[in-house]
Image (cartoon, rainbow, N blue to C red; front, side, top):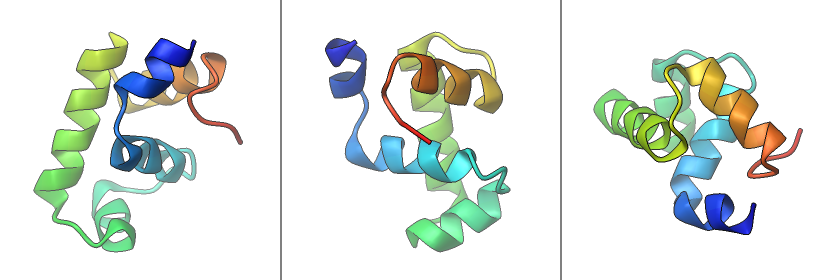
Amino acid sequence: MYYLFSILTKREREYLMLATNDLADKEIADRMHVSVHTVSSFRNNIREKLGTKSKLGSVIKAIKQNIITL
């Protein structure tokens, strides 16, 4: 579990926390003060690192693996 937590950057974990609120990428970008392209990169990097296929899949796996908490 610790390994999965440490594999994601602080900003990627921040993205996942915002994604739990069912926000669109534009809303997440605004809250993180980054571009939509950067948010897309976070999402793609997380999916690759966690081996998931969607934003929802990433959020669920992150919660199950204690990477983020609600």
